[in-house]
Every structure is written in C-alpha cells, then in structure tokens.
Image: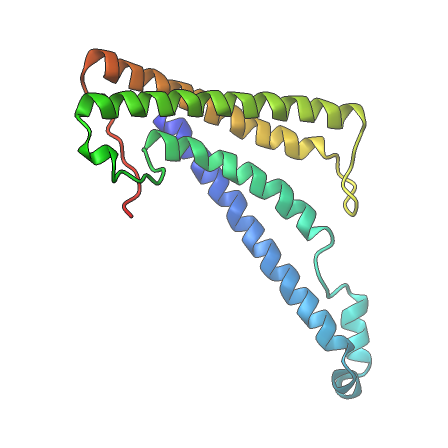
Length: 189
C-alpha cells in the first residue's frame, strides 16, 4: 500500500507540475499577445509583431479546462500518501491530554469515517462519469469528453478509498489489539 500511495503521489506531482508549466506558458503567451498588440510595439516591430501573432502567440486554448481536470486528479492522487503516512494536519490540544486508548479509539473512528467518505466520493464520481458518458458532454473550448476527467479522478479516488480502508483496518487492529502498528504522523502546527 505504501508503494501504491507513493506512486500515486508521484503521478499527482507530475500532473501538477505539468499544470503549473501550462499555466505559466499560457499567462506568458497572454501577456506577450497583449504586448504585441500595443501601438508602440506595432510601430517598432511592424510586420514581425503581426507574424508572431499569426503564428499563434497567445494564451493556450482551453488552459482552464485542462487545469480543472488535472487538479481534481492531483488532489485525489495525493490523498493516499497523506493518509498512509498520517500527514493530515491535526489539532491535538484536547486529545494530547487523553489516555492512549482514548486516542486510539478516536483515531479509529476518524479513519473509518474518512474511508466511508472516500468510498462515497468514489461512488459519486462513478455515477457522474456515467452521466457525462451518457449525455456525451464535452468541454466548451477543447471539446474533449468531460467523462475523461471524471475517469482519471475516479481512478485516484478508488486508490484513495482502498488505502483509507486499509488504514481503517489497521486502526481497528491497533485499538482492539492495544498495540501500535502504524504510527500517526500529522503536521506540526
């Protein structure tokens, strides 16, 4: 499960990096396009400015559609690694005073609920994907099928749900076995 979680996090990181580059290139293109349309630049560059504009210098068509689809996948891709390493932010002002058994119970309940929520999200993504497929919905600018984004997010959400169920089972084993199997990380704040 750790290797699967790590793989998903790396994949999510690659997608997120590609989206960052896409946005930067698109913003640069949009800025350059505006610059090449300004009167002083047209006066100095003349036909060269028009040649650059005709070559397609400008924002990337449908950049926000790609970002929307990619970020949803990346978020779900990061959840398994965060879950398996206990990397979620926690506020333990009250729980730090509780006995170990109470903290184990609380963590078990939290992880069971979290697994249930991720299963519900995966089921809803599946239903949404089927709906988008049935109605053949496409994005406005790029005209790619919307269900593709749902399918990518669904794969990551299913992995998130599987890892979360695994963690919930571990937490039950810790609570009922009165031993630590997987330490709880959490972010320090």
